[in-house]
Length: 537
Image (tube, rainbow, N blue to C red):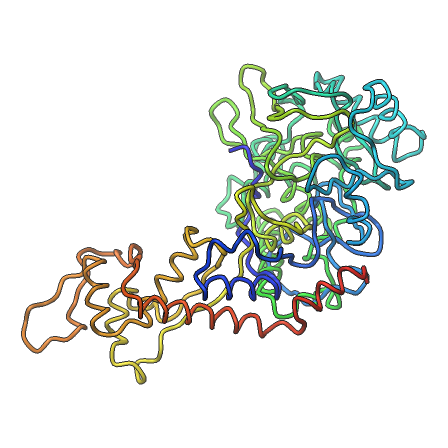
């Protein structure tokens, strides 16, 4: 509820590190070793920071999976704060900056353009003075953000404890002016400053035409918001112009915008397929809107992709007076990602506003962060344009996943093939899974269940049938193929637990082999990738 979740499909794929560690973890069955394992990174990564111009490039999130291939030497996805503001920095830069930050085990990218850090605990008047200096300079970039804040305040928005801090160029973060206690309302953005899917459906001629027709869209709510933004930003005097002017223009940290050379850095990763598919879905949505509303073609596909990326990486799912809405929330969407979460957001009907509340004390000058949820680095990269170097929860659980496909031995080589399908389903000879290091995760548990069935001998299959509530036809001369399901569609409930020591060992070996196959697809080892990142080139 309080964690950001993109209205997108899940992504799959890690890097060679993810596959190797997962294979070892599952094969040994040593879930307790999770905490001591070497940290996994898709391609560098840190807390969320989109687009810091520098030696390395942050990786990307939006669009749909289509073609993927590589990342140039100077464009290795860096530790980042995702798509909202976009930064790029070399791993070396980030590590050297980390010790000067007062919050432990955290990379906040709180560097000024001079490379100086803001010190926590300074007198609040000093921090507030610095806050003014951060947006000073009266250049075009600074004035756009000043106009944006003035517009919000004129509309009744409140964020008295916060200020925007410029890191470089258009890259900014939200910081506390003074020490703030827990459970303090930090941000209040009135409903009239939100852009919702309902507005796109009802307040634009194009939206009314589109959504009153028989349409086929992968993400209708996002498309509604996109239609609203594209059509209204044409008006230079539109109410939302101050917001439109501060939205990022550069989304090259998102993989859907990578060229073949950049995508080459992902060679071997299933994430490439996700990028290709994501792009294909976005193109299909664009073409569908143009089919129904030919006038929409005045917006190029590149323009559509730009806004689609902004909306996909910045939207909030909220409930407004009992109605579910997909919304763009100015200012609130500038908070970078950090876990465990330090703030909570919601729409408060009694205030008729979107609010963000602190969950813990914040120090003067500290960056104020949002949580985008528990996600695999592949999903962070695909949807938000960054990867997290240490993607673990407080309990030590790693959220990274890898995609593997498991398959039964062909019927010609397995006399029990049909019996296995009795449990799995008549068409389930193979199946893909997104594995994590956590056995309690549904997909990981289901993958191990598949393996238990795939390697079971005849006696073990009898036990599995009993576990699954499969009855046996008592007619003489029938073999395992005579077992039948007690009710239709119960294949979906074929979770199989521990069967025997022999079966469990064989199942873990099958799972480890699948992980090792995936690992072998990567052209470099984890250690080689690590060295590449540490050298920042």
